[in-house]
Length: 328
Image (cartoon, rainbow, N blue to C red; front, side, top):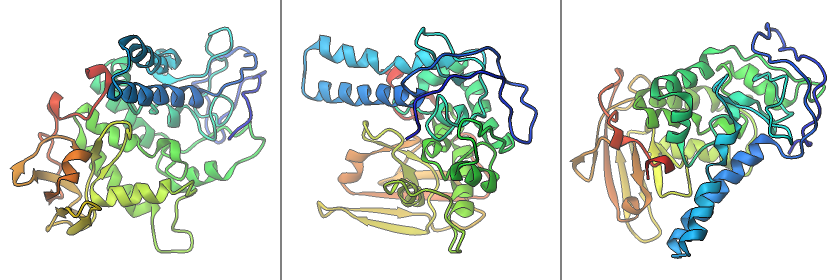
């Protein structure tokens, strides 16, 4: 974990790139990092889910639901990014979205803006709708891998790994952004998730001495690969949904502890056929961009028809999107 946020006394520079997005002025010291506050909002959502399951008093349930929306207080409409605040409630200045550290633990605003696991629709609304949201997701990959390391006084290995990966501001070797690819499924563009999931598996995980993309950190980086290779990923573990990506294998069988099996078929899957053309669940056409844990526990047969051409009609309806608190 990083130290507490330090005061900023001068305009920051982005290494190797003109820093045109910096907003000037000084900022006083604050004691909690922005990513902690975002994590607390998710934690409160998890408590909200538990309170409902335990049939706690409505007042108690509503308290944690309200607290889980605190992420909105950190959203800066001027930049459409998450931005740190001072003790007086004002946004920190200067603001450099490429700056690592300071308001963020080993990352920057481009990494942590997406840490609204439980209410992606709420984040979409803050950004002004699906088009703005997906454009911002696209920008993560189209931006150069520039950075400002001044908070640390040197380049930490997480920064260097992002730079070497050369996938824009997408820092897969550093866990906070690993779920971000799957968020296209919430905004009616699941084919982009399919593309970037496969790109990440192919480029960031290789059987070579330098073939691993960064930190393991309690198993998350390898777990990302295992889930993604199966074709889905738990973006929000406090729900029972897995968000669909693209399977890696032609056939995979999960043997569950209860004795049931989940069979995942993608017979025409290969390096080029990374897009889900059609999908069926237990023999029925399936357009949703998520699968429930409960349904998998009952045993399931999932069939993917893969293609080298994206299907821009599948998974685009409002009801196809995974869970978001704002849609309750």
